[in-house]
Amino acid sequence: MPINTVQVYIRDLLDGLRWPISNLPPLQMQITPPDPNVDAQIPQGYVWPSRGNESRSPRRGGTVPRATSAGAPSGLKTIEHRLELWLVWWGLDDDPDSDTLFPGMVDTVMETLRVSPDPTAILTDVWTSQQSYLIDVGEVMDYEITLRAITDQRFNRYDALITMTLNEVFPS
Image 1 (cartoon, helix red, strand yellow):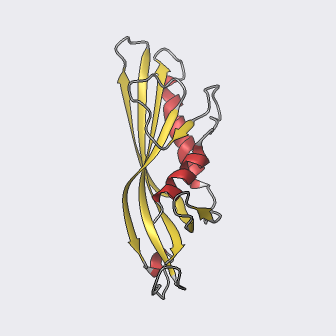
Image 2: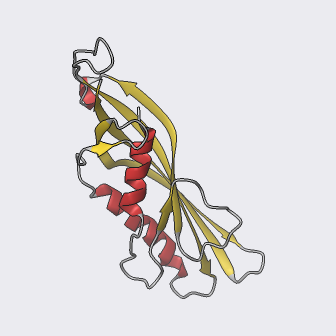
């Protein structure tokens, strides 16, 4: 089923996200990761799938019957997608707000995911034209933040990994 649908939805949801208490440029979201050796003075993010589990489980919205052939009437199935959302930003090491800026950026991204529509509107996959909708966006997330001093000592590189689980519901 369409992994693309999920990636495009999350990218579009977060692309251009503005930060509530800073004059930093808005978040630039991609699907394909940016070059890790390029300065990211504009906050960058990308979303990539890591795992998935497809089932007809009624716990996650699945129903019967199973389709007997392609295009035949059917119930619903779900894919539990596990996505990794990476954030990268280079901040000046002497910024007086450096202790709170990047954690605040991570909080803002997670809040945006947490309050996204549930369920989403009907989405159409760009490759297959399969229609589906997403549920539980922002319900299950964990994060990891790292900080690295850059060689010239004028910048710090901040990285965060937000891992989230969400469900895609589709006819099958």
